[in-house]
Length: 251
Image 1 (cartoon, rainbow, N blue to C red):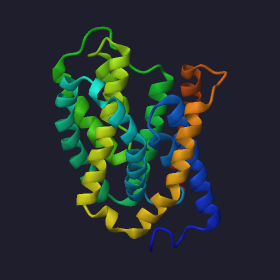
Image 2: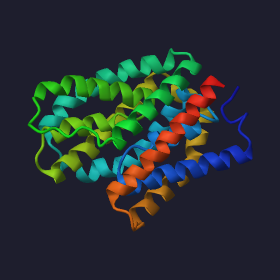
Image 3: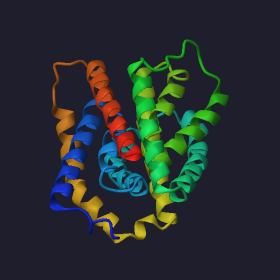
């Protein structure tokens, strides 16, 4: 059945608002929208369609950052990670397109809950400089999770925390990696023929304004909460969303 055929007007409105909120979070906190948007979208569409859809929107949102800040990024780290991201992306895309939808739903719920618990626990803070050899597991795993769930950026952040001392350089390198990761996902899905589905492209076009509004609003909102408090609040919401995904799976 075509993607849009089973979506009522109310469903589309909920999806539109959910995507706007996800990109508002991105505009404020600067982390992946998939963790916020995917659990909601999973209530209306298969996971195998969610990731390519968000990849298109993420690419548009990240392109400006990549063009503006790409030259300030650490080229050595980009050179190490980019080929590994591509290899991991190929693996993740293969899993996404050849795994049963119900299994993907279960994996999404487990992934979202695990990430939320990891973040709420404070994450991993390297105490010493990491070896560049760690680019191999972090780059591959980030590529796999990026293609499979639309969110592997936190793995790049863990690696870069142990490699770069300059916070500004780390931030720019991280945003550049996210832009490259999104580009890789879009190209892989394009080669795989996922975007031959006109309904998917139409839905992406319908959601593009919500993405733009969310990013624009997020960059202009001043919160009483600190960024760290806000991120913890969002991770709490992500945790609850992951639980709902598992409830749907087992129901």
